[in-house]
Length: 169
Image (cartoon, rainbow, N blue to C red; front, side, top):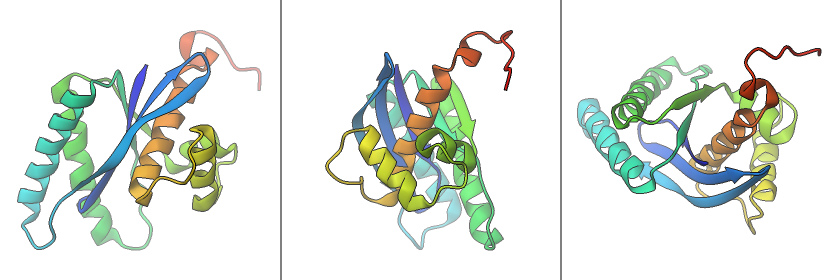
């Protein structure tokens, strides 16, 4: 299964493609989509949507994993990121790729095993799980790979495969 992780944004959108199968995850490609500062939001959103469609068309993922928004103190930045995230969701739907959304805590839990892990722990575990020499840069790309890993682990859960199964935990 090819999973495309997306770390949403406006200026920088991280992406990471992994192959998942038989309990293994392998990094295929990662990078960022960028939009220039100083242009109107509408033009940035148009570029993000166009670039996402191109990326999805080139990579042919089986699933897309996107981070749910978490608002810290700067709500203005959060609103702009929400616009970008909306365009990303639209592009995935338009391309017909199944979309899965995860909170930052779910990503941390899946990658590190602790939902309140620090960012550096997530990045280091992402490097280790993908058997990379260094943490992918920029951070947005590393975050996107962590999102892809999160979905790989969630999609292979026995509970996910059998929706009628009940957890005894």
